[in-house]
Length: 233
Image 1: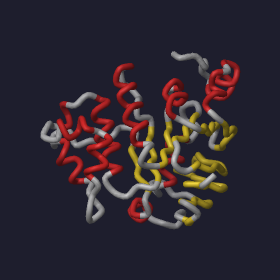
Image 2: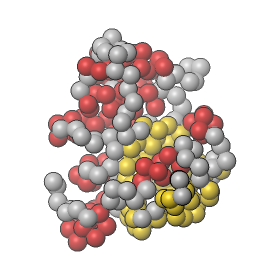
Image 3: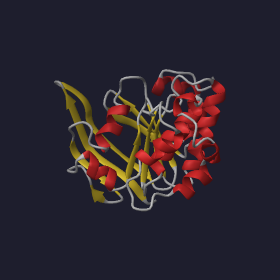
């Protein structure tokens, strides 16, 4: 297994709260890995620690290169892209203007983005605020993929979306996974079962399980690990 990402004994303390308490896991290159757990166990903080948005101690390696000492803009330049939970689309700008703002490389890869998301090419002159939630998520992912991306971190992309739009987002992520490695924080278990190859489960600031999505079919496992039923709803 080629490791895209390795976290070893990563700790984060914010305002006196010890949120990550020695997080250890590996992310396999070229696939989707789901980062799961109940609310408030440190999943979003883990993503933010990888990109340096919170002060962290411990080792974080991107394809065996240590990045834990880097500032956020340096982590991004190293090839990590982050799609935050609220998408942070500029709603008054067009789709194309949103993408142009994200350009960082000398030759941004619009070909790949438009091949992955032809919908965005069709709607490039449309104001982003008038897109569906699923389409806005495509814009957020497309912005991340415009530049050379070795690892895509996506935080709860289906939160608050209607079932039809969840399917749209799943399609978008599945397509994005053809271009890069994805670490996905997500509560929607059917989505994880559909697109993830591996799962990592967190509880109270540590990793308590690493495995495969088929384990979520077991209601006892899902309830014990996540406090939810393992069914399709």
